[in-house]
Length: 454
Image 1 (cartoon, one colour):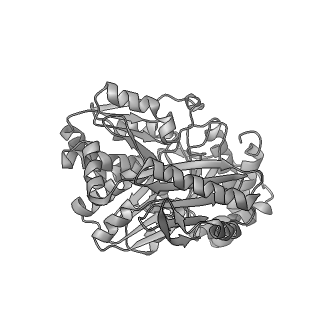
Image 2 (image 1 turned 90 degrees about the vertical axis):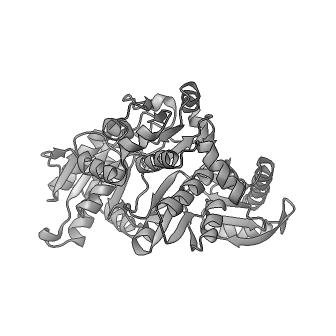
Image 3 (image 1 turned 180 degrees about the vertical axis):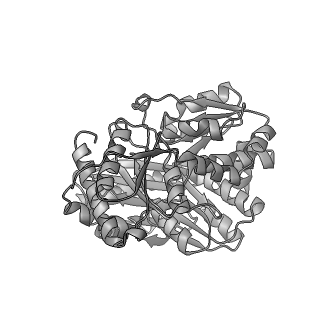
């Protein structure tokens, strides 16, 4: 939280640890990568970014900072294009009182190994000082060119008969609006600079998108697009203002990419994702792999393997041909292109997916616990022993302990129990063909988990 655990002193300590890591990893000056520092629209984000850059500069690193707020994918793109290391000051989708630091490398989040090494240096850091002679540069030009190379944006929106409402949720993506979503058919909302985010967390989930849903219906729009606080995640509502979960949107995009973009390779998705994408992969004889929650695990696969499509439950998407990073703006343009090329309403596109591959009703519940869980794997194993062999009149087909406990039933319905690593909280997920069945799975999961905790 800003001014509590996230302070200028903590930023200096992190910057020094980061600088020590770079200096020791790249001993020769000629080998040291450029450092690019970005920041979002949060309270004091630019000041924190300048402080980080000043410490890195004092350590002899070549540092440049953005001259305006920007999205996290802009920094990720720079690390890919320039072979630089990236630092982004943002708390992404979290409430206004929080802030944080993301480290980027190779067009994606830093690997767990890299972050662990940096954390080790941070614990031993002694700040050497600050050099405030920092270059401020427009980082967005290269990124905008990259986006425009992927989509014919004027053609997409000219082909749509109805407007599109874009909810920036007061986030940094609004800084790119004029250069990306510049069509007269775009109706923007929540674009102003408000570090309080209108007192609504800039997280594109159903409960935060009431205004977007109303705007879509009032303007008879083709669909509504919402972008999170740092622009790397997104969500949509259809022409009726109905929210589509990632478990519904992902199969639409995946099928479109296969049929219209001819993508090939493996489907890789977070363990909290569901069965429709897997059924599509099976239909097209494509391999599937589940990974732990966190887009960094998907990104690592995209670097080392031929991945057609990567998706996580929180609204992060990437596909073959892009940098290995989730990007809300790129995904929003893919939705627009899909609607434009298929000449169908969003509800019609999903209806065709549902008819071919089945229905999906996804629920997530955060269950507070009387105490925290220190060993996630041990907890998952204990929960597995508490699980009945038949749930919702369906036999348990398999269980997985990749990240928490996932229980898959014979009809592909599933539940997932994931303890938080930082607070006494349990994240419970379920997907089934109906709301009643999903609620039944949630209830079963909570009962099993709570019996272990007590």
